[in-house]
Image 1 (cartoon, rainbow, N blue to C red):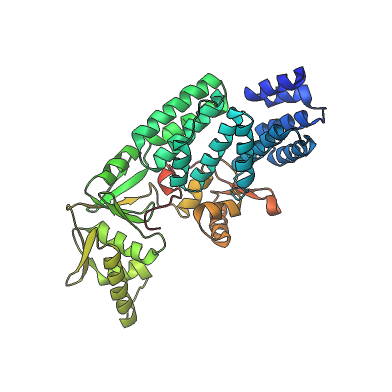
Image 2 (spheres, rainbow, N blue to C red):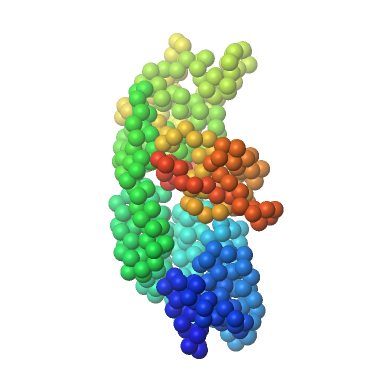
Amino acid sequence: MDSLIAAAARALAAGQPLDALNFIAVRDDAPALALRGIAMAQLGDLARARMLLRRAARAFGPREAVARARCVVAEAEIALVSRDLAWPVRPLDVARAVLERHGDRANAAHAAYLAIRRLLLLGRLDDAERLIAAFDPAPLPTASRAAYRLAVGGVAIRRLRIEAARAALTQALRAARDARIPALVTEVESAIRVLDVPAARLVARGAARSLLLDDVEALLASKTLVVDACRHVVCQSGKAVALGTRPVLFALARALAETCPGDVSRTALLARAFGAKQADDSHRARLRVEIGRLRKALREVAAIAATKDGFVLVPRRGRDVAVLAPPTDEAHATVLALLADGEAWSTSALALALGASQRTVQRALDDLTAAGKAQPVGRGRARRWMAPPLPGFPTTLLLPVALPGS
């Protein structure tokens, strides 16, 4: 490695892409192309960065398998930052194997870290935790260790293990400060703030109050029957019934929980679940069918009893019933939850993360754009969507995650 390449690499490791470009901007050899690609990625020109890295990978000779693998890892990181979640993971797995075989433990560990972050974005927490359990962060440089701890904290937050999340994020902040990269410090500090602002509303017995993530963890660990309107699940004492794909049943469950221990009239349930302003015999028959389905779905955690005017929810264990609602009644909250990370998302990436169709996502983005809460960047296939963070709108509980029974 010549002195200019070495100097550029040190500048990039310190988060100083302009200094790196000053050393290699006019060079077209393979190492310089690779470093220029990384510099352009740090400057935000992701399209040019990917082009430069692909040129570098082609320019490296057949005996330079490690250098080509490093280019693949760098391109995978750019795909992750640009939220190209459909980027094929096999090249990254192959590159990781090559790096491990040739003793480049630092870059092999970085490839594994990228795989963990991708799984986290897709809500595949079980797969992410399996990778974390087998992962050794020791070979990572300081900045990458901070990012790894940030990912570990993210998994713990999504699992509502808040004490573990605080410990991981504290380690991430220490490593970020040691790395002396301001952008990384800011990102970790932003993640830590999520732990100390209202994350949801608790609605019980006609009253509502804000909850922190610690409070949400304690609530879900209690004997309270919780109708979780953030993740569309009904849970109690560790048992969970996922109703994300059954919106009518969830609407009925939420309506019953909000008035518990009182009952809800049939007229109110028809309006809530079906939007029926004037009920007829067909509506009442459908309500009986849906209540029967809800009884069956909730049989392990609650019963639904008929009353003179309607129905009442009766928990199997304990007496308390509560609704866990988002901190605001924001339309298209799950889309905003993803956009609020500050990155630019394509409609295909949003659809992949949410498990929805692109058309559904596009309709949501159209509504958010009209309301000034999202904005497009670019044109055609290069178009991406961004949104400024909304004050008082933490997104953790709204992010996609595989739930029991889903």
